[in-house]
Length: 476
Image 1 (tube, rainbow, N blue to C red):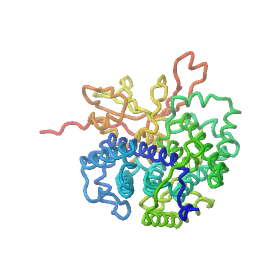
Image 2: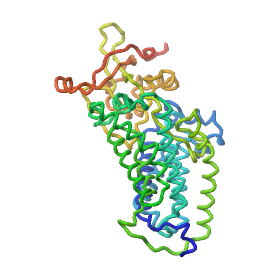
Image 3: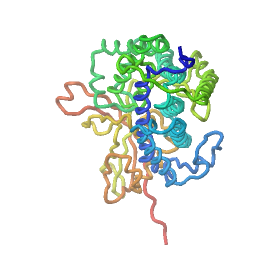
């Protein structure tokens, strides 16, 4: 028996390879998403400018490279460097360099994305941002082709999957009574933040199947996470069960990379040796063993706070207990909305607003708008403005820091803002007035779909805030 047998897990070599390459692809999506959307959201002239945030929040509260220097060009450079590095790792570059260089590469990816998340404000206040950072941090210590996968890090990744799944299961069981009654999915597919192309069909499944969905969710999230730590092949079965459940969620909606990264992390429980055999590795460097033991001890200590949160009756969802986003708590949909409301933004080029004024709608890329447009699949790409428009419909106060500024950007035909939208009804000259209206949306029935070709039915609820108008030119 090798003296390092407790440390090495060569039977997981293929699982590690797929896990690392897939995680790099998710990093790539995250960095590209940041590069393409930040100017309108976070840039110097954005809806919530990073420079304003940096003046209010010290480095110790939000560690980021941007505390040293910020400009839109520098942000773009950070995002595109991260994307290029992610692509290189996804193509196998980290396995073609020495172990310490591979670890530095993963560390740089983590540090670059941490810098973005920690200045991202409300646009980055989602659990999957912390999940990517925590997974990316653990990946630093997963090794490369120079060493066998370290079992301790695989167990830490299973602990991460456990917190994602068990935390989500507990928040549901403790939260909305419809989860215990198995009726939440009567509503969820219709009212979720951003439905996908199959969401209409999921919503129209018979109610008994919705109850089966909810029951299966409870089993997968409250029972199977414990089996991730069982001996093989039970752990593999548990990991595969997590993957299947997450693929069901991928098909039913758009949840950024939350489901995909959970699938990837579940590979840490899958013994790939029956398919790919094992590999022989050389001696493990003592410094690498020490680093893995050190990070394991760190995670054990930091696990106190999320573990306490899990057993608390006041369980919180998606919280980071430290500014480095290490060892977080997760959870989703502790409550389910029964009705769907959407904020529809309109503009007009008429100088004077009357009852006969013609208002033209702005269409967003992902969120519901045109009732005849089938929802699109965007995940794992994250449309940040579209997601926050769902929260804006739930609570105007949530959107207060940025919504009026969004309308004013439309009055300017601001090109960065318009790039976040699907259509601009005023391509040649900006509108004179912009307003928002609140609508009640629901999925049509089979009969309504056949008769009208519309996937949605909508009814007006009323105005959403005040109409915003272009300022009159100042007198000379």
